[in-house]
Length: 262
Image 1 (cartoon, helix red, strand yellow):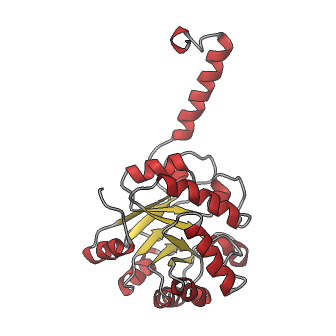
Image 2 (image 1 turned 30 degrees about the vertical axis):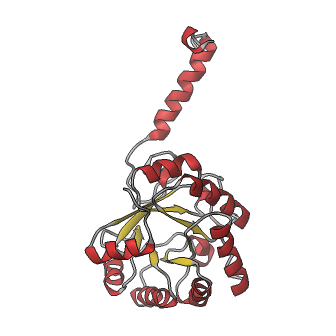
């Protein structure tokens, strides 16, 4: 990859039927790795609340924390489009708050775009943020910030509402939309109807692209793994073995050896 990924790049990929790749990253080392591997979009997800902070949901994540993590990722990225999640209550209180907080993720954090959850209910917020010159990725279906309202992490099956939400966020100016926890046939219909790219997570193979949490993909967690995740490695097992071997080497005097001394 030689040139940075832009929003027009993504539209061209959809037109040509080329699949878009997207992964999360929350710090400099992982962002650099993902970017060097040619992934098209990097999301600093508020999933960092679960993945790196140890919370049971994304709700406790703050704006300051999102800006902090976005800064780290942005420093590492040369090619991918960097998208930062707007955390819970950063865009729900007022339009002015939403614009200001989105602006922080771009101006302070270095993101190229922001992502927020919701369909028709947040269309006015999407219009306002895009009107301020900030690109917005929408997110419909299973929206983790509404986990209590939804009664848990449940697959969303209301085709009429989901399609209406997708069309509404497109009309509001979103450049793409994440479809999470949606049956494959409904996601395929939405993808066909929209001009903007759809990015699936637990939404089947017909979406224009796919996104996963990097720690899930690499097998770096022992928490529950959702059905939609494919683990391409089991790094947690390898890391445990490495740390246990290190501890044993130190305790029996095998480390450091002569080759590690000055």
